[in-house]
Image (cartoon, rainbow, N blue to C red; front, side):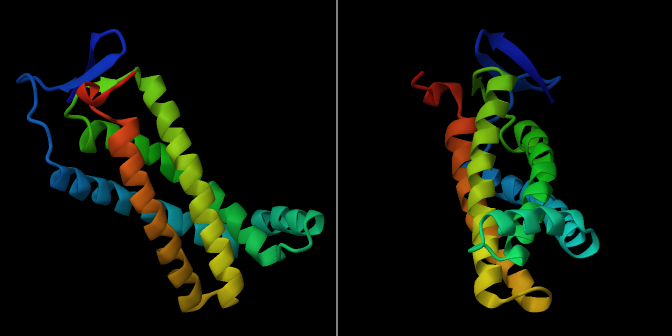
Length: 180
């Protein structure tokens, strides 16, 4: 499948056999969740490695905590580690979702415009996900074990709902749904 410009400002996915049948919302959700599983694996693994096996999130988190004493250093370090991990997963998500999940329709705008919209959806998601994780880590006093993974699951779940809605209805919206 490749993305071919159809007219200025509109991109359509096509294959060697011609136009593709649009995905149903159910199929889009399933594909989105599969891409999401890959992103969660990237996100959770990197968050854990950064937070518990490197020092830089604690160094940055300590600086944040010094500047804002009401923010515990451990929570700030969690926020920093999560932010870095989400940044890596974001690129993976855009590539896979634009190609597979929503790659069957004409899209509004250029690939660069779609990435800009995607980046904004992910930025909002990052703030939601990271802040919720930091809050839950502080409330649960979780550094390791089940408390950490519970906080990860809750913050990731909230971000997933936001990401799908933003991706389907704004980032990769079909050209016919456009009101530009």
